Length: 143
Image (cartoon, rainbow, N blue to C red; front, side):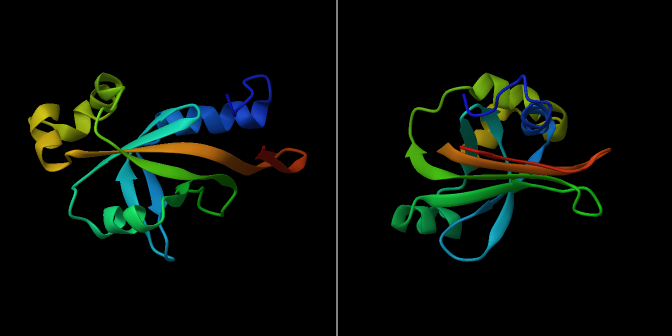
């Protein structure tokens, strides 16, 4: 486990990673795209169409950076670094489906998965968190 639940700042990052609907994924060139995701420390699961540029980039270089949206003034930041694997046996699909059930509306998760048929399993190796607190800037980098 990367994020120590006894550390308030890391616990905050853990909660955001569970609650946020979108994370930004950057691949081998400076270009980030918003994607739906599921956090299960230390893994992020993303589903993609197999024909996208991000998948082509990951086939060449599996290194990724991810980040959540920040507060309006850049005062609540969660950054992740890791390596992506194309995963033909994804786990946690039920939890993913539950997270996005409202966003899917009348579309079933199975129908959505027909389009977003490729699973990306990202093993997170580093987490950087900072936010403005009452005592000033709080910062952690794990490991």
